Image (cartoon, rainbow, N blue to C red; front, side, top):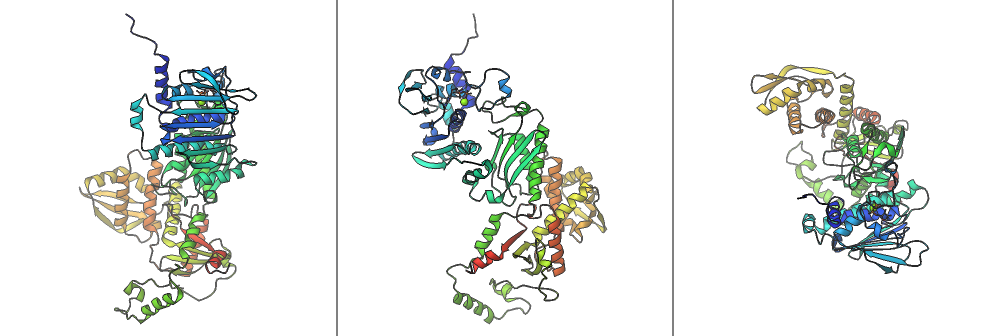
Length: 595
Ligand code: ADP
Ligand code: MG
């Protein structure tokens, strides 16, 4: 007896829906793509109960004729490609002809449509019944009770909040690549997004939409990219390292204007920031990659979120190089919002008036310190207005000196921050963070050029360690040697440190080694060699840098400023924190109400 049979059409559609319609947001994405493919310039998305009760999408695109309506709901029926050649020259979102039949098989579905010039519109439901409908030119798709007949799918869904977030993300992701289309989104009758169509020059007109989606100060804290290599082009914006985000959600990547979550692109972006950001922070970016369609295959994923490149390493190299290049060009720019926050922090708290402030100061002065050498400040925990300590002569910096981008040092506050005067403002430098960056960049270039200097310890330092710690050190011995850190096993439970990088100067070698070991243990076995190197370098650099609370002479401070100006990426430390902030005289004047 025959065992094999063809699946009924509806079941086949439900199976396809398993891939295409994972959650309400997938429906929104497919329907929005259809509306954009139909040339709509105005699209509204109405959502009820996170899409489970209703998803209704209204567009003003070219519509579907009465004759085509039944076909639109059939599997493998599309108006977008005809031959296999078209598959490799695609300029529409859709081409598989799967979305509508899949969605209709797992919901109560109606589609209303009217083409340009047609006398009336028509409606079709999931059963294929057609009747007249009244509507303007365009299409309305109404999806109700999603997954009512596939309860297993419903169970996998997350909370309303999470599903709404996915929907919003799907909407803005597409809206970012179509700034000339007006898009609105509402949840349960409340408008969530209204993105107005931009007119005119694409790059400039993108800015309002960009800021609406990425956060209102994104465009002032991001660097624009326009790079070309061979027949690839990249344009968009990527955030300054000091303007980062707690997860990777704000990374919007497009290939030929198609949103993708492609691993090659995401990986290249991540790598471009790897030594500019702490592990738990992420860059924000909107990047559009354009390339000839025949250089990629978009038909490798049911929802086309991933693509396959003919030459993925060329693509990776291009993206990495382009992002890295613009970041280095802007490496001495600190995000604007950092300075803004600083200005706010400087403002006098409103409840503290001048008389109160004087009283506090008086109390401080009448207090007799218990210890002679202890300052009032330390003894009582009062926070006094910072006192500038200037070493050397009390001379004003010359007009020549203040011409440097980071200005001329005038003093140090709290033994930790350098104050410098520039032509039109002042700079506050976190000396530890800044020096750490310098050390890191220097060490890195020495390692790359194989010119690391080592200093032999006069008395090799013996450090006791656990078996695991010794194992990882022995395993990495050669790597560490390249950095100038030489260790060798010493008996069963210890190693001895023979030399450390010369750059570090007078450093506690044991503390350094313990930190490096901890780092090595934390690294996963699959961490790439470069990541590993840079992680370790970063730890070493931290040890060699000037601590907070070290007094510096004006000469030393100026030397640090001059080095910062010459060092790539010096505006932030290896953890993505700013190394300095700048206040313009204009900002200071504002603080004092002079402007
Ligand atoms: P695909 O988009 O892969 O072609 P779909 O199942 O999403 O497959 O849609 C089937 C067809 O229905 C499309 O090829 C298109 O001709 C038509 N269609 C779907 N949605 C719309 C719409 N909003 N406006 C105009 N035509 C549409
Ligand atoms: Mg489609």
